[in-house]
Length: 289
Image (cartoon, rainbow, N blue to C red):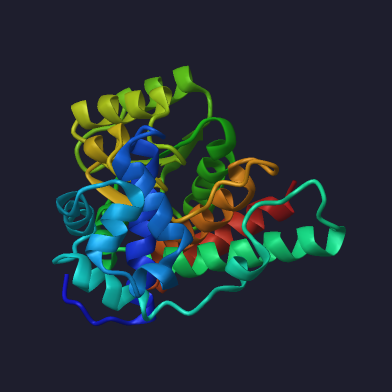
């Protein structure tokens, strides 16, 4: 990537590093390195590669390899970016909610972490991938929206948005119904799937079925280098930190929904006349019931 060394670039890199962690074993040296980079960005920006390697008992080549995984030329580029990262309020008050926290601190942490995740998602959003997703959805004959568990409400929201504005869409949160629906898709159709981890067996199965029928699979997810990211035609990433006390979905749905909103807004903006006509028909029908 062109190294502009802006705060946005730094957020994107940190978000991509965070997205690599779930695909690594907790005791893996690379996982330990990434966790340290995420926890101490300012300190790393002032550290030599030799000192960092010694501190974490990893090789210098492993550090360079990790940098290249997120599109950097090496550790020098990473340091330059991290130097542009201002201390976040989350660093000051901490990320995780503790049993000893008062209500004011709990509220501050939740709002601060949500804001940080929104900023990271903005920085990490691949506009080229978004453009491909927009083109596929805008031309789709049918849109199947799929998510299970905590991702189910996102699929239902996507279906509601697209149906309300004149698209032929369906949504399923049951794995069997989702698979049957995906088997009815074909060339020119879209399977829009939601998964936090990218390793939800049911959703990955839906993607396989949809693609086997010639449909385009678009995934909105948080983790990189997963089964889902290897299967989908287009991947849109959201960035969210896990919160053990509130559950991984505390901000995941928020950031994934915003990515969905970006996709939806870009799809409908160029066809306002048709969208408005469909919206008026939909809302008129609702008033009859």
